[in-house]
Image (cartoon, one colour):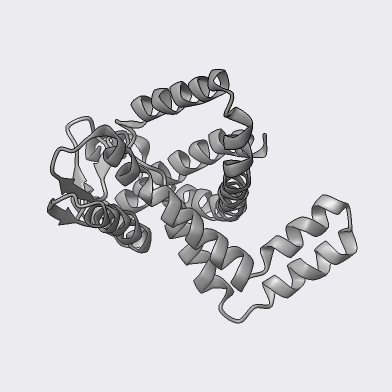
Length: 248
């Protein structure tokens, strides 16, 4: 339930951040192409991990790759493509696995940094228990971490680029139908309990990792959003809206 609750919140926050960071660079440079390039540099660590995870899993699955790029490009619909990996056409199962690779890699990286380096999991556990004293001490400890700003930036860049794109999700409905069919078939065949025992722990671990990654990302985004909003507000004072409309 926590995973299902955090997913739409994370999508909304990421879309807001993506749009408003581009607006900030447009206000600073007054040049759409330069704004896209600077925005790319901010998220470059995450873009590299995103596309590299596509490429690596494709190679591991025996899928030939025909192109790799982390250079931004504005699409015909006005959106910006931050990077891409071009692969040969394959079966829908391998396509789905390649598509989900950035989410898996991004979640793993976010959990590793958030829990193992910044110890945010201990703070979250204390809050969940209602132990405000331990939670407060944990937050103070995190705030005193020597490289806190560096790791917050890395978390911000990785977590806000780990979501699969529309093309990455293209094969997911077919895989979902396949898994649903296997589940129904195993239930009527009488092996549902056996399968449940075999995969329940793995599924639970995966849900915990992704939920933790989403939670850490939401916390980081909520810290960053007021900063982004404040910078954008100040820049608006120097450029009226009608001039920005011409740039767009």
